[in-house]
Image (tube, rainbow, N blue to C red):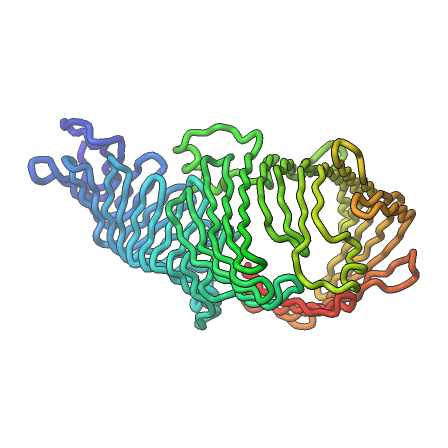
Amino acid sequence: MCRSKLFTALLFCGLAAAAEISIEADNINYAGENQFVRASGNVVVINGNIKLQADSTTVNLEQKQLSANDGFVFNRDQQQVTGDSLQYDYQKNEAYGENITLTIRKNKIHGQNVTIREDSIVVEHASQTTCDQPDPCNHITSRRLSIYPEWGDVVNDHAVIYFFFLPVMYVPNNVSDLSGNLDSMYSAIPQLGYNPVEGAYAKAGLSYYRNEKLTGTLDLHYLANLGARVGFTNKYKLSQDHRGQLRLHYLTGLGGRTSYGFQHSMLLGVPQKERSQIIDEFFSGVMPPSSETYPELTFTLTNREMSSYQWVSYRPKLGLTTPVYSAPLGLDFSFSGFAAQIREEDVELPWDSVDLDRLKFQPGTREYWQHNWEGKVERKFGLGAFGELTPDATYSSSAYYEKNQLTGFWKRLIYNLNYKKNWQRLSFNAGYKYTPDELGISPFNSETLDAGTSEENHFGLGWQALDNLKLNYTRHYSITEHKIRDQIYGLEFKLCHWNISINRSEYYKQYTFGVSLQ
């Protein structure tokens, strides 16, 4: 069966079967009493969905290992690894490579070495980027980069984030997916800010990644009005459709307060698959299931977690959220709802009477049941060269119960009509909002609200002044009140894959600043 040019072998050749792999090469020779197979010249090794290309390889039939020392290309569906040398155990389906470049989707990863197993890829001393320029505008270096196909997680340990060549942040640990969506990122650099309840604050988290099923942070917060808050946040995964998190914090101010939160989420209708199938689909471009594709049922149990001006406890809360579904006639619809037993306690801060009047709540403690649901339906009309028109309708309803008595409710129906059109350097959008029915009774101060009919319109203009600079303006006008409700001035600056935005709202009298990476 041996040829001088192209040769194919199932690695039997009179020996005990080693594994179902095949080799094609210009030259193949046996050595060491047929223990070794040496192949050279356009070598192609195939084992299931794995394809290895190299200039030369040596196969140890006894140990079931293959080595390539003069460069290699290792492919598994859409995953590709290139490097200087590779050791491949085809019985365990494990590989070890040196001085490698790994490509998965749009992510290019360089590393000192890589270990490829069925359920993980670990790259030591890695550099990761989505930029295809010789000098990338963004990259992350890490002591160790781990990819877990079953969960779709990418974990960077001891990572440094770069803006072009400039390091801008050190992150002990961050978890994301290969689309760039962050699941968690905790920096040793504190987050600084201010709000009326907490006052000036500094918040930091020391993160850890136990394994692909358990990650978390040690939370360290300083709040000028409330003292120090310390504790932890743990996230866990039981399976692709069951996951959640547990939080426990202690606040030193206000005489000492303990708060906790537990949340468990379940995706409904996720088909059961073998682990090997999930991993194969990941490398074929299929991301793990999420709430964007399946309904999500959430159970929440909390005690005295701060929300705005109150301590809020859910005892418990059950929620359901659906993805956007498509229906006949081009309609898209979605639904969300929850039912909860809620306890609210006002934060014991020296609020003045003006604040209390403006916020319109009675200080103290309230316990009640609430159920809320909201449904939305929309239809997009493509108008070709004339742009896109999207009408939608949203209906929401809430009810409040105390001691099995209905004490408050809220109903709202909103119609929207939105239009947008883009030219080469100019974009335009406009919209109309009509609320024919908005009424309710407050369960907290017994006030009755019947807002009646309200109307509002808006329009926005965007001008691409330069290839990397865009100017935006948006105006919201209340037809009912005959006045401008808000005007927003914006600037977007694009630098390679970085998007930097600055917006100014006249209504809120504040600037917002954002940086995103595409």
